[in-house]
Amino acid sequence: MDKENSVNVIEQAQPAPDPAVAVSGDGTAAAAPKPRKQSILDAFVSGANKGFKICTTSMLPNLIMAYVVIKILNLTGLLGLIAKVFAPIMAVVGLPGEAATVYFSAVLSGVGAAGVAAGLFEGGVLTAAHAAILYPACALMTGTVQYLGRILGAVDAPSRYYWLCVVINLAVGYLAMLVMNIFV
Image (cartoon, one colour):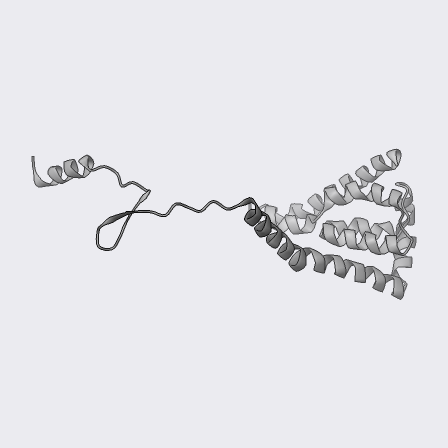
C-alpha cells in the first residue's frame, strides 16, 4: 500500500465530527451550546415589533398619501371631472364616477386604494355597499404595477407584454365589480 492510499484509509476510518461538540482553539472538545428555545411571549413580541415596523414604514405612508390625494383632488375640482368622465362606466357596476379613483389606484397600491376609498367614504361619496362592490376588484388588482417589475422583470419577460397584463387585470377587476353588484 502506498503512502497516498494509507492516508485515505485513515481518513475514512475516523468518525465524522459530532455537530453537538465544539472544538476550541487548543484542540479540546466541549459541548456546543444548545439553541435557546424562544418563549411564546418572546415570539409574539418579536412578531408584533416586525408588524409595527412594516405598518409604520410602508403601509401607513401609502394610506396617508392616498387620503391626502383625494382631498387635493376634491379641493381642486379634479375629482368632479373624474366623476363626470367615468360616471357612465362606473354606473354599470352600481358605483358613482368618483369610485374610478379607487379602482385605478388599486393598480398601483392596495393600501393606497384603501386610503382613497376612506377619503371618499368620509366625504359621503361612497357607501358601505359601494365599498363591498369595490373590494373584490381592489383585492384582485392590488399592486399590479409593483408586481410587474418584481415578477416579470425578474424572469426577463419581454416588456412588450406588460401593458397586456395591466389590461387583463383591469378587466378581471371590472368583472369582479359586475358580479358583486348582483349580490349587493
